[in-house]
Image (cartoon, rainbow, N blue to C red):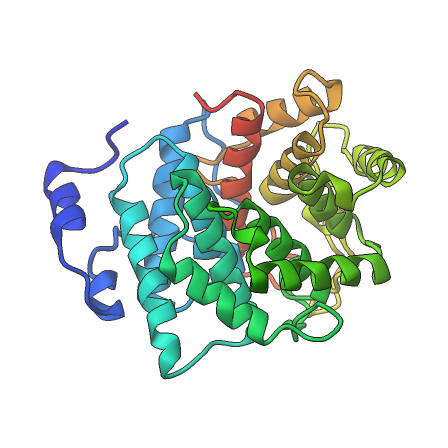
Length: 341
């Protein structure tokens, strides 16, 4: 599946990367705006979806010089699983490594450290080798973990990623457990995970998005979720499925829009559908389940011409960056159901 010209592939693969600025020079052209008015694609294309997330992530790190949950963080968690040209993936990975190296002079906020460590660990899981960079990133995360097991997470109302501590706890638990080389059994990791489990026991999931995160976690650490909770959370998420087969991101939380306008609860979107299908599959719901089949059909028929799955921001209209994560989870959901063709 060749998405790029030979000249660009050569430049991406052989260019030495010594600084964030040099890494940015390898970026592809930025994708167009995330618009609700973009037409639907006539036929689903995995190649276009991968091209979109490649462009979005490379442009983000070139223009923002940081790691974020909704774009390059989500990207690195999944890109290694996708069968496509490796050059953009290599470039984003190098950016993450340089980003961690830069912490010797200036560290990001706690959520930036945790998301970086988590994305690196999930990327390592696809190669089967834990890197020194991933270990170093987690070392920093464990150092600033609070006594109750959580981190001082950004709570600016940007659901679902930057609105509560629960997301960071579940994400870190999933990633540390997936890290290769028995990382979860090492001293710092084992102690950190014990604190994470204590936090989750003392702060049960309340929002549907939190429950979906717990279902994803259950697929990695089954002993952390009991059978009754799993069944109840599955049923709750299934109950939120819309008549057209998809899910609405806004229906997974209680997030408020910055202008006080109503959330879009009756219209399915890429992140809501992709993430819920992915979480339900991770919790053991079979791909043959009627709700899963309807969700997959929604994904197959609602990709946009650019390759993305549009998702309206639950906080503010305009840039809708959650469409980037929505496209990543749409691909992951398709992969979990054997539909990534």
